[in-house]
Length: 178
Image (cartoon, rainbow, N blue to C red; front, top):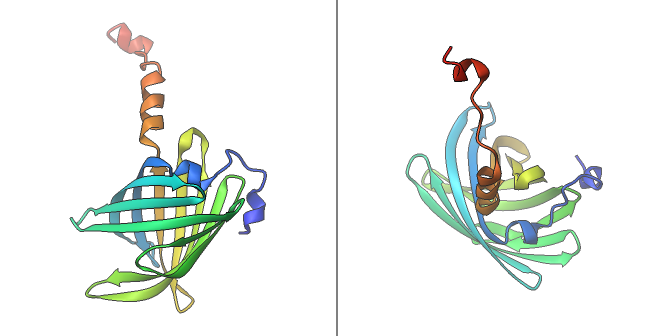
């Protein structure tokens, strides 16, 4: 895929706007064979100051493990981003167009008692109603080792949408006691 393929897609994704405030994420990691190895949730608090977005991510894994990552992301030009975090090697680079963001970086990934240096090719796609879908391919030495799939939601928007939806109506057969 190329980021320019999404230039005309809507809704438009501005990373600093989407991640400002509270965001919730629900995800899983699949190994290269498609086996789900881990499931997790993540709570993210984002604060924007000028062209800088700080994301405080708190991961909660199904096996009870907890992890925290703090990203500092700078918008270097419209649609272009650079980011740093404690376990990211060097600088992450992002480019957004239309409803998509492609984010690439190397990371020291905790595996067992050690770490592996891996590469992330991360794609995010903003959907209607504030849903942000994220798919990241992870590779080591150029070989795919797995995929992370995440769905991000803005809790205020999700609650607002749920509260404004009309209640489900009973089907005529149930209403008649059939």
